[in-house]
Image (cartoon, rainbow, N blue to C red):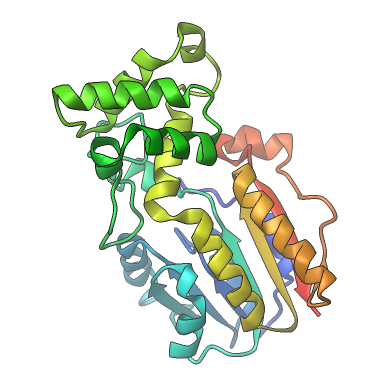
Length: 295
């Protein structure tokens, strides 16, 4: 079951009120969005964006006959196109924008796209309904040096070189098609102590491939300025990240825009889940929330 991360904190910093308009740039399974919609009724609007066609279709079916159908606009697109989306739907007077950059439970459990190393699935890892790049292409076609680079840059994998070399060696024998194949290759590349840590030894490799496939870091950078532009004065921007590189981009953006007099930072330090929340939802453990207000 999908559990929204830092739900109370999101509502506190977005501070939605009746008849206001909000954008959820990563609506996923709508956990945060439903809580926002409850507070903006009767006439507030929520524009929900997700790159996954399946998730958007699921939400359309689920809410097409509900009492909130007139308050919810659903769009399948990349949030890097936020300005175009806002223009297309003539979505004005935006009081708050939310980004939850975490991978949804649906992608891990149901998508069949190879996001999880616990399931034997094809190596796709793309959010897009029409991907230009998939993980299988990276592991089978990219030079070893480039594979090593993304493992170092996107996940700080300490055995990046060894894993990249093992991938190149394995694909010479036969193409790497599935998640379980890749997990076995990673297992061969890393020492035994690394295989028995709390965090699964394949976690960082899968994370780096997913970030590379979806160009996640560039998309965040593209979207942030567009989000600031879309907000009305005093509108709020709340972002939950799960990765140090994401958090760094957000922190730098907030600080730069604050220096330029365009943003007021509301969270001096990022907010993190309580021990109780982590216990209920272990996937929330690396979440960090930052919030700012448009001046």
